[in-house]
Image 1 (cartoon, chains in turn orange, blue):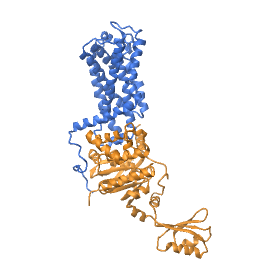
Image 2 (tube, one colour; image 1 turned 135 degrees about the vertical axis):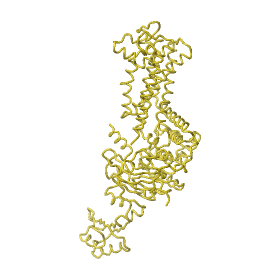
Image 3 (cartoon, chains in turn cyan, green; image 1 turned 135 degrees about the horizontal axis):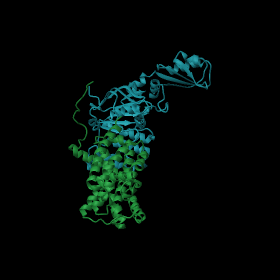
Image 4 (cartoon, chains in turn blue, red; image 1 turned 90 degrees about the vertical axis):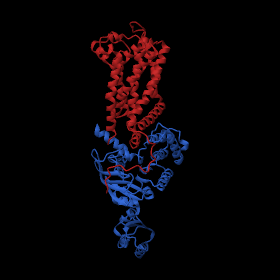
Length: 335
Length: 284
């Protein structure tokens, strides 16, 4: 088996009172995208901070390209690119100056640095804004510049921490496109996201973490299959007292009825002809059906069943998940 | 799972041209210095500390205080210029504290920390950028002084040595300012450093007024204040009136030696402390 490019074993990290990571394991094979999924405060950013040498774990082991991040941080830094959640750009420099600075600090000569910066500005469609100060960039431009900065040294391992949070759909597409191109070049990517759609679109494997623990780990397909089967949603022409009894034998568990009494929902085993059976059962009871939908679980369903929470806005941020909050926590602990 | 203790050889990254560790450090410091100079040029208010303020102070002190403060064996403007140079350079180190304090609170510091760069270049680069603006400040003070009638009475080398001595002291003070910037909770609190430390440091000295007329205890403080030694040394090297030479305190009797000693001492204490604080602040 080939050596994993990203490897995390029983990693723990505590910030003050918050156990940000409570024993996390995952790994990413070379040339793949690992999607790290979880609500705010789950520990995603903490895991990225440990892997990118910004934070020291309390226990456990983390390695990038086979190199231990605690023992050889300098070696790890030569192999990684990082686009962090709160865009780590110099707001007083222009886009070009930012990239040249990062290139020079990655060890390139000034001449090489300029050439590489020009190349990336072109690639990320920032050439027109290249000589404007970053302070005046839109959110989408900053994200793109941040991702571009992470690619300056052509690192074999890339960490993208919520690279599309707050982006409009077209900017998001452009970031996705950039990630896909990188994969073609053999780069290994760890992507954290709150968007299931994004993980579904990009990730080869998905690790769901919640409260500092891994709650699921698999391919997007495996995760969908592992969730509790399919669901059926039935819309009636008008509410009917016999409707629940008519379908009860065809579904799993309780039938949920909407307030207006017209919508029924329940878990099902997606056997062939299920929709036909349901319509027939309702028809036999003299109930008119407007619509029947049997659908495979989405990653949203998976996520819901695993964490018992909504992904977006379902709960307030807790603990030092946002890089920003992490700093505040640290300062609080020190003062 | 295998445990790897030796870092495997680098395969994928474009190898930075083979450099010695020292030349790599110089390369990083140079990049950071330029970055900070761009910052200063983008914040005109910050630059006014070293451009507008020296002109204003020079004109104010020479014309407003000048008539009222008698200087034995010379004129107030010849006396005060060394003091003005020290005052401006000392107070401008506030910008260093605020600048580094701001850096520490912005995401960019995380970018730096994840790059294969020499981390101390964040500090060294800032100190050199601020030394550059200090040189600009010294130039403006000198030219303004010449315009209002200040005249050194010494050889070129000696006058230059006077400027260098004050700049060296200001440079060492930059590292104190960085310790403050690194320890402050916010850029605003770093700014208060100016009023709590720098202004008393600059004013409880012989910079603006001879110490002879100060109350006894304050006079002792002033005579041992490093700023007094630096100012007296500059006056001595410039051949300007230096009433402190008549004071029987060791630094006032040996101002050049005292000024160098103070600067070296401050640097020797502040630089390692700044490096240590920086490491502590960036460990989580």
